[in-house]
Image 1 (tube, rainbow, N blue to C red):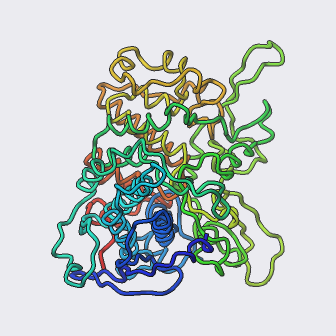
Image 2: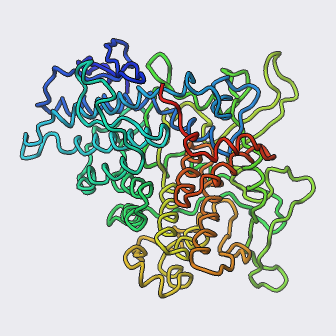
Length: 562
């Protein structure tokens, strides 16, 4: 990737610092700068390539931070004694003004680069009958929308501008309105909605990726997110649905899972789950990184979540008590043929003496957190050895932003809030294909939902679709206790299903940097900041009253703008 970036002849102006009253613009000549030459004109195909690569390059600065900010402040991971001072403060919501993960300027650098391209690309230019800039224009608009969304969910209300800042006078933050997440979501829904059917550019293989399109944000998925944050639930559900079911480019859940393979529960199997999670088959969007520091920015998430020689096996982030308790509380179901009666037999895994604790309940924990105790190790090295299979190697050289299961879970969240709790729960327990939709979603709900539940009988089948809960519990569809509880009202049912969705988000996306934002969003749906506060206060197995009191005030959710 860097060999391509080095071909970019432009050096640019970047947002170097962000003060309380002034955006200071400074120049930089380092290879990893987020740069755009504001005296350069955009009038050739090469300009489209170089400009887009420059924006992708600027995304690298926030790649690891996107995961860290979204995970460390949530309830699913805990910081270890080996964690840095900044990670510990981030988890404790303390001293965040000078925290290394609080660098608002890097997000504005992405926006600055995007603004310049959007302002200066001549969309009327053609070559061989095709518009030169149109494809890249759509991609860059999506990057800008994503960057602003990250600003809003991390900083609350932020200065908003869509023009390139070229002077110190223009950099006065008091000259710009401040937008919160609702305003930003509403703005960018309108800004990018016309780009849903524009074909993205492809520059062939780049680094370890065979297609540069792996780096782009899908417009429908991003619109779904924006609508979800804006409280436009039916629209969010439609964008997610249309992404999953697009003719010629459908995305079934797949049937990868961690499961028990036999009646004796003697061997937990995780291969298909780990392979699908790590071999890119589920990826939608990634930020590409370098494979070595010599070439540029690499991801350090491997060292944070795993025992490596770089950290002398002292990993910084581990599963929290809250996450492991939730995982153990699930039921793993096996449907087998009884050897005596030759009839289907539903078996529930119960803890068996001799099996490690980690195989109790949902096996996704076992499939992600691989632990070992080293009987002998070098002096200065930890004997506790952890491999997090979501970050098990540096050779992948990417940070994941979206994968298929993320979209299904948000689709369920949107459907539920739009008034379709049975359909939302069906995503968790059964999977949406023709027979399951007919059998498990009431007719009146199907009729009202209409096309939101339209799935091709040829593309979505029993062979390629399952409930998300089955990924860790094998046959969730056969679990008689996994159901929507009896509720007095539909509103109560929606809250009950939302609780199940929230738990499923935890089980499926632990360590991926989504959790804090999921809790924020659900708390906003409910207009109840104590929902987030209570979850995080119980992160380590006991109730932290001081942390709860701090987080029940929504203004304390955000990083300070320094």
